[in-house]
Length: 138
Image 1: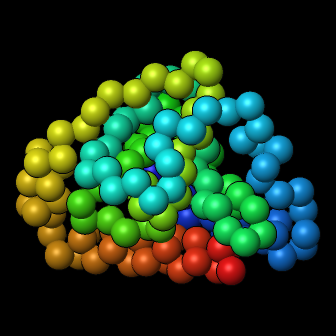
Image 2 (image 1 turned 120 degrees about the horizontal axis):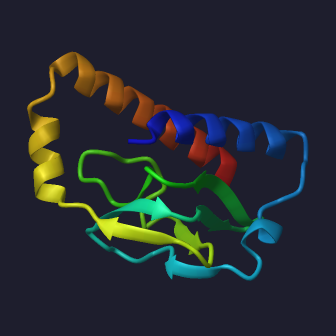
């Protein structure tokens, strides 16, 4: 999973926002949305090729939360709440984006077999990403 990448990117975006760097609308210009914010989709995908941009629409415009590539996931993972899920953010695609569906039942079974320590690490990282995402959106 790409939690470490999302953490780093969200932290960097927050820093950029605090020092008033260029906002996200330029990044997603001419990109097509493949998932729209507010949709309640219960599916997730693994990126094979290309780039996906996770953006949240706010009163300040679109805020870029993450730029994801090969090996990253988009969509809703049942045991994660990052603020990047379809109900709270849109996904924009590069022209060459290719992805495949993840089997969420298998993923949940794998997660259920993890040690409590590893689950806590995943949940804590997820909570930090969610907090930074909220700060970016305010």
